[in-house]
Image 1 (cartoon, helix red, strand yellow):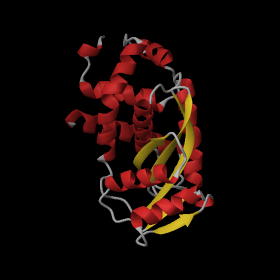
Image 2 (cartoon, helix red, strand yellow):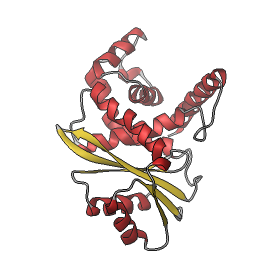
Image 3 (cartoon, rainbow, N blue to C red):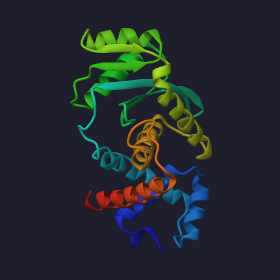
Length: 231
């Protein structure tokens, strides 16, 4: 079956599956072959470029304004085009991703641009932001928010972001690396949105039995298919 015979929602799911599982482009094309779908690894890559931004928008619509007034912000190093850069991410208490920002330097100017960008994507009035203890964050927060937002510089309270960094850093190596800043932002945004959507727990530290996790996983894939069908 060729891509021309597949409905758009199926193509979206193929892109999501590739972003979800740790397979190279060639390995994923081989996996699709076992499912009776004959595609080249280049075709999968082309779909990812075209559909990932739209997929991220569809996934983000699930929570919209249903979020609290606190945010967590952190950064990690990511190799892009053979050079190390700083990837900044802002999430809420339920790990919903609000913004991704890539910078070649760790500086106050970069932190300032990151927070301004994160504020622009939500209508919620922020009351508290938790970051690690980088001094540039404090000065940038004062510049962007003044005294209107409480700042908690705490590595411990950002442990969930620290754990997510392992996943973000591990995926590019499997995929053969990230070639450009635009590709890095696109991948990180839709990868986080997809992973959070399929997560069995709706809140951090929430435990669910294996049978319940499997049922939730199947339900959310079905819900995603329905969302994509009307997108």
